[in-house]
Length: 206
Image (tube, rainbow, N blue to C red):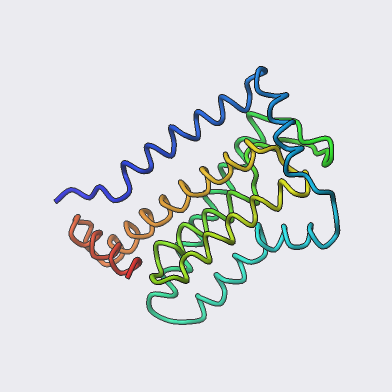
């Protein structure tokens, strides 16, 4: 049976991301984006900046290391997290290089503010962990992803569309990481057939 794991959601995510991207770079929406930021912006603070960096950057490498020190499924999840974060970061860097967008007035920056890298990394990791672990604890990962995105708005570091774009990009990167690791494991096991990949996907998500 042909594998179609997350194929349709990935297409929808890409379409949504393209829509948000077009909206972001539209001259007609620039003023609206600034007004939306005013709704969230509370002010800059060292504490808020530290929390934002932890949720958007430092938490996930630390979690990868902790999971890698364990065995079995945990190591597979660690590998998936690593791959997903790499995908998210490479895509974020591509926008910085080819489609730069001026940052907010609060945080003047060189390069591009779209999409939010902190949000993209957080949602990439949250997607992998949400799919990989069951029970109510999976919603904690969603809250961490949301926390990273909201913190960027509260600090005035990103526009609203930057954060939405980062979230969509991160979720897409997470689904791609899940699919790629399943493919890698099945090929390494010496069986590239669909049944083997399907079993690997089940191992990650159960």
